[in-house]
Image 1: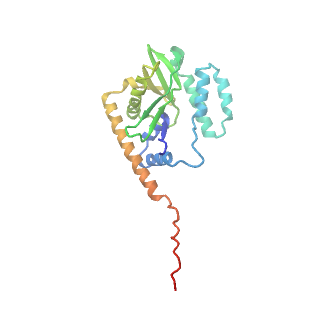
Image 2: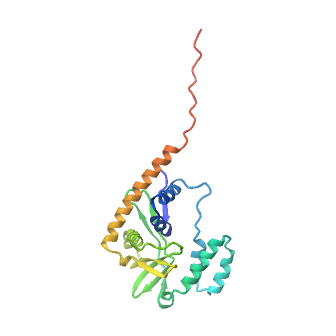
Image 3: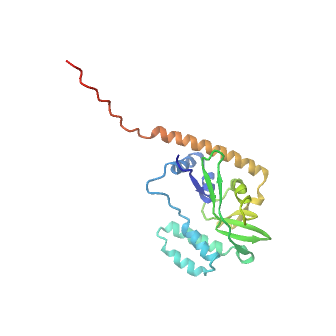
Length: 226
């Protein structure tokens, strides 16, 4: 059985924000990935965020170390994101914490979502696991809150888990919390999961239909007698 495709949370909500055709392309790439393998372009930013938050290293030192990122676009995105994160006032007010990741698996085991907290904060007595969205694209608040509801069961059964979990956008420093989600968001999440499972099935069928079939050699037959 093929492994279940797993999305990081940023990759997942980024896919939700796409129109149908590019969304199908993303799904196709997850089902039939390139031989070169996938690349997590946000790793340098997450490493820098860990140095800033968990290790308390100075911003100047972190930015200097990020000059080694080869691609200009990746380097600029990571540096701009870490500067915005440094300016986020809540980091100066609330106590930092650490939380484990949460996994959601779709009802028919078609895909998984992995929510990896980049930081945790005790915000007004609520232990909050926060995943950072460092992307030039705008966040869709409705889809983001709906996606956060997928994680409820995973975190509910986790010993030492958070009271709340959220996404922080470095673009505008807005925190989108699961506690803000309504019943409408939970209903939307169910519809999204069902729709994505159907899209996965359709894309798999398309891939199987276009795969080259192995050449079948004709069966050998003995020569007919004279």
